[in-house]
Amino acid sequence: MKKLFLFVLVLLTLSVQAQFSKYFYNKTLRMDYYHSGNDTSEYYTFDELIEEPYWGGSHVNLVDTMNYGNYYVKVYNLKNDSLLYSRGYSTLFREWQTTDEAKKISRTFSETVVIPYPKENVRIELYSRDWNGKFHKKFSYVVDTNDYFIKHDRRLVYPDFNVRITGDPAHRVDVVILPEGYTEAEMGKFINDCKNFVNSFFTFAPYTQNKDKFNFRAVLAPSRQSGTDIPAKGIWKSTILNTSYYTFNSERYLMTMDDKSVRDLAANAPYDQIYILVNSKKYGGGAIFNYYNVAVNSNVKSAKIIIHEFGHGFAGLADEYYNDPTAYGKFYNLNIEPWEPNITTLHHFDKKWKDMVKPGTPIPTPATKKYRNTVGAFEGGGYEPKGMYRPMQDCLMKSFKGNKFCPVCQRAIQRMIDFYTK
Image 1 (cartoon, rainbow, N blue to C red):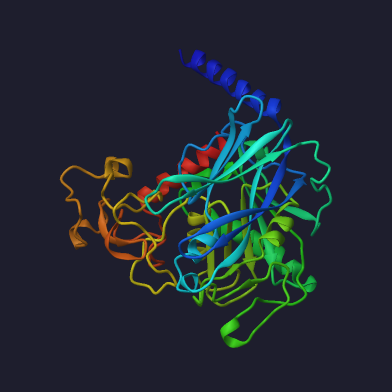
Image 2: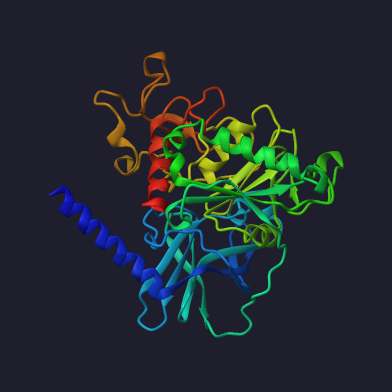
């Protein structure tokens, strides 16, 4: 019976892979667009289509089943309106909408979605999640695959090198590491930092048990100057990705608004996740689900910054802290369940980690010594001290006091690894 099951599974996998080959080439179609608005409004405008040489994603799990992210991209076959591909993602724009600045002015952000390169004409649709958690179609664009305005030339072409490769990108989580603030003379340092990055990465569960499911590549792209911008101190550096501390006026939030450069540089390798490694000792980093991750290379807490931010960017995990200052206003609607898998408002707790709570554990769970190592629902999380709950008293998504993700976060990470590799 077991052999029969495996045989059927192999046939099913081959059939789905044949579907990929029927509709897509093994390379990327990138659509850049502009996302504009203020705290209460948003609109989209088209920018450009670009062909890129690699596709790092799965050839099997083409339709997203996670329902994560503030936005969704869906790709439809123009002939029969069938759904060919979808992914959830988030961007800086949604975070900016919660800041005080968004109440005063409108801004425009350059954003990107990537899809496997279609063999026939398709329709790309972009969806936005509203305050009540519902998705609404905001933008639609028909791709004519014979359109000679699809760009085939590339910007920021640099050599890449294999940091750690274990197999075919179609069956691995592919991470491309981009250097920020490393000069030509510091490329050797970047190579060593990438090796340290990978070694640190695999010291944390569940990544430790999944070493054979990841590929790491890095791009050798020097900056004119070493370091990154620190606006509050009048420090401005000429770097390839234009990162900066004080994103949204939060000192430790180290991000970039230069989406095009990030995507241009990442295109030198197949990728599922982009990781920007910044040449700085100053504490900082950030990450956005299915967009990009950022961490510094040489802070004493760099290893935990790297793994914490990857929890956001890869697995869609939320911050579990609630008493640290942020630049955000009201970030979550406490009357609905947030989409992130590691926080809950208890409105639909059965859809979160209720199955992992031992019988007899009170919900909500008091933050006492008795429940210190217990999975429950502890009040405080997602920047909210009241009305939002986290799985355990502490976790790498809450603080760096310990060295572990809680079981709920570990399960969420494992599910995402499996989605990309099985």
